[in-house]
Image (tube, rainbow, N blue to C red; front, side, top):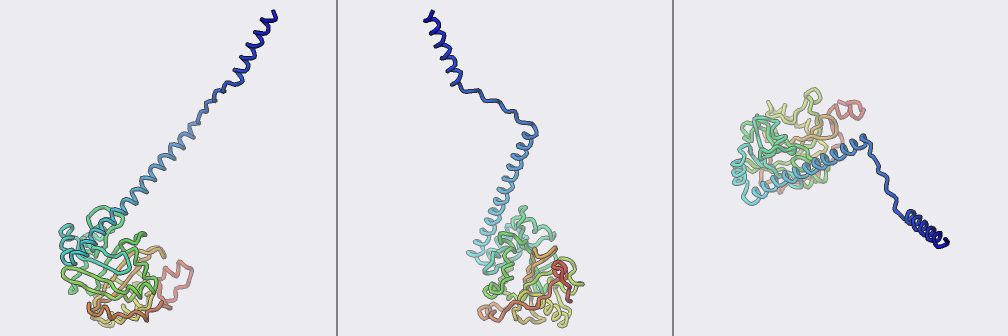
Length: 303
């Protein structure tokens, strides 16, 4: 009997030991359906955001490739041949603009639709970068226009007219005061004399328009020129005459709603470029801003 009891006792010990060392089964956790929906939405947003970011950088790279290819063509083939080649690719390409020290080294286009090149590049591809362009009623021909106006988007990466903001700095201006313009067989140089902020609405009772094409007489010109100098962030000490030709560059700015950043220059003889002296240029101590600038800062408009 003792043997039987011993055997039973040992078997019970083995059973208890087996039960105590057996890994307990994990409890299944049931995820609530609202939580499942939230996770699914999060994944959808994550994938969509990643796609948008990738597309953003891919478009930027593609745009830079277009610009680099044109710049190489312009550099190694000369302005006349390069413009002819580019015009064969897109007959809207009418000229070329280049500014030392900036990213501006671009073709200039022109379409019957003034909006078209704000969201299409020089290859007629849809692009948030757009292209530099003339207004549809503007011309490079100086017989038709005393003041050529070129527009471009203000891109954060500095492309198009995004690097014009550098002219807010007086030292940058002193080192890079010249703009180069090419069209047809022409090669022209311009000296910057005014850098300003204006509003896209009819500015200050319409007393000033940087895109004015012609001047009825010398008195009208002097009023326009003096106003451009008064509004300039810099005092360039560049004299201009009623008979001079001008170039105006226009882009957007973030200073206030509807702000536009303007760079204005007058044409100079090509053989005078090396004689340019900007050492006397200073920051304008009496800048006339548009009325909205004062309103935004809670200041009384002093004019």
